Amino acid sequence: ALELLMPPVTDNANARMKAHIRRGTAFCQLELYVEGLQDYEAALKIDPSNKIVQIDAEKIRNVIQGTEKS
Image (cartoon, rainbow, N blue to C red; front, side, top):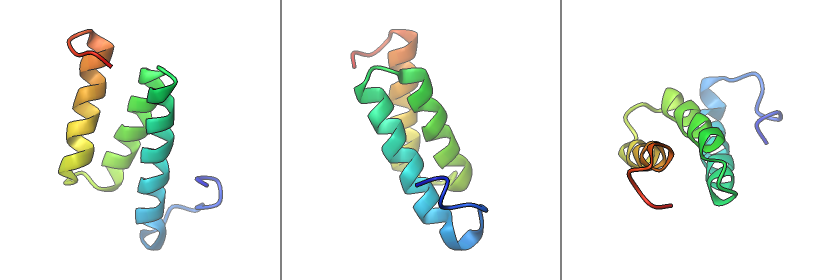
């Protein structure tokens, strides 16, 4: 999906953000937390004010650091 949403423009920002979140979630379900966090951070670059994505990214960081269970 992300390849189809090129070039990154304002009109496809929401779709790109959703694709990053979905792929990030899939990585986390496969216990690939670093890769998942990269996608969540990419989503935050698109919408830095999204509180839900901020909270989820912080949870992933905590899992990577070993301070929270997956």
